[in-house]
Image: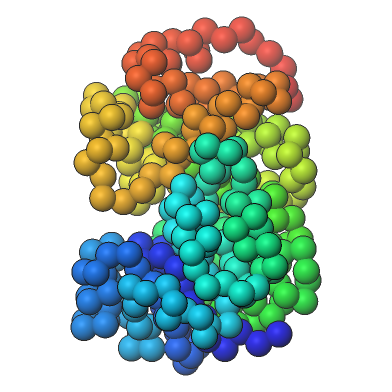
Length: 329
């Protein structure tokens, strides 16, 4: 397999950073963006001033607003918001082209993981998942980063790794597509919870406890849905969880922090230019957990908070008043 020319679908910060990674090997990358100002900024200034200001891009990164222009690319990195992935792929000229899913979430109306969504939208396309602890501005700057690339076809995954890996962008292979996706989806919800703890001023002890108990929820959900435990304790699970639960560079953490400081979720979501995927994942994840009888109290609390069903103080009281239980449960 040869992936000489790569297309990136999605002109946000993460899509732009991945385009920079793809071009750093001296090859052309074409990025599709919905926003005209993003296309103009990249082509005119080698910079995405809308979503990744301050990061100069390789001149080999070019942008387009026409999905048809990606028809000549050998593979696509799909970095659309999770809730729009199906609609974009259904109109894109895929023709069985390999897809590397780089978004993190669960489709809200169907409850489907994104690799299922992509398989339904592009039935003949080989699919891989790229996930891990990644802040876009650090990746674009060439700072050391490690990610998981998961695909059932080992030869396909190896060829992709050879195309995108760099000394400072280490790619570890896995055949656990479900596990890589579940880690990335669940950690976004838990990051909102950790942000609430920070915004409420509950301390480092509380945040550490929340990360640990949240990881237990991620593990329960992952194992019940076919994930491997070693994937969940790796880069795309625990690694990504630690990163996004610890910094305001995480959109999900910053959303939770603002809620903890007293702002309403509805107001914050209506005013955001960028997508905090955890806000869309929380209700569907809570619904799936309830249907499958998987105990996920932190996820349920975040969903309740985001829906306006309860305030921060009530949600915290409900969590803290849960009866004691063995840690392994």
